Image (tube, rainbow, N blue to C red; front, side, top):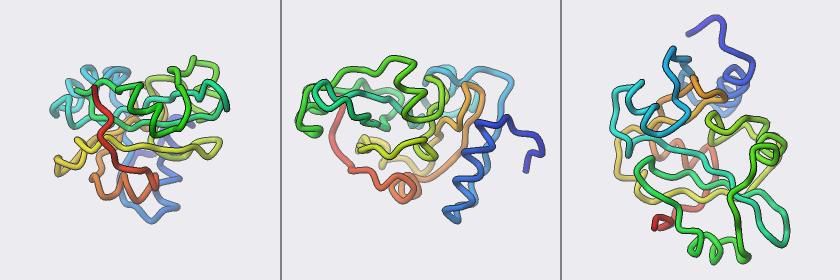
Length: 160
């Protein structure tokens, strides 16, 4: 186990351990800010990247997290129906205030505030997936079943 994770990556590692999950956060020299960068740095397919995208309800202002396969674009019309209100992609300040993490490093867990979470059904087709772990250089390998356990997210068809 690494001895010196950045504080944001350590926050994710601590959350994993608190849930009794034995996944290990690793920090890489290459950027994992985008799905393509992450897949290249890790050596997996882009589809195996579980990207965390934060949206904001246009009426309620509530945060909504979508964990999508790296190859998929989120269909905002589908998300509108799921969220029961129009949504828009959140700006960086909102993402940081609601999750505690910057865009490019938002993990699927350990957020500052609770939020509704939707999981792209396409992620369930993989044996292993990779998610951001607090910074644009930190990731962890997990299984789709662990993603469901750690987030309590609703599995849905969310891609365009």
